[in-house]
Amino acid sequence: MNADQILMEIRETNLSYLMLAQSLIRADREQALFRLGMSEEAATMIAMLSPAQVLKIASSNTLLCRMRVDDDLVWTLLTNHG
Image: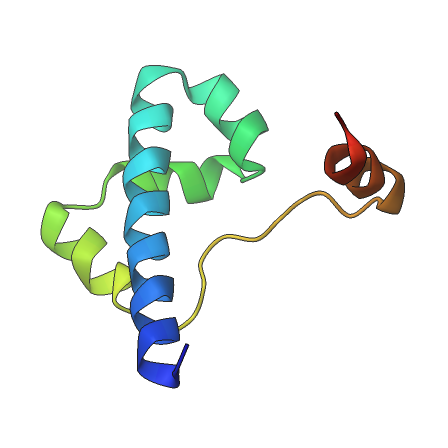
């Protein structure tokens, strides 16, 4: 992958993440906060974003989400299962 492809993938991931986050927050706020690992304030801001704002934020070259599995044991179990 070259740099342009990586940036395109980051932007696509950001858009998918924001759309999923909005959907989860609107459907079940408590579950969304837990599953997404975000604060009430962040959830409120994301839920209120217009489609144009979502697109503008998603076009950033900074990944908006992060993996929350920080435990080596969990990664070992996930990758060696089966």
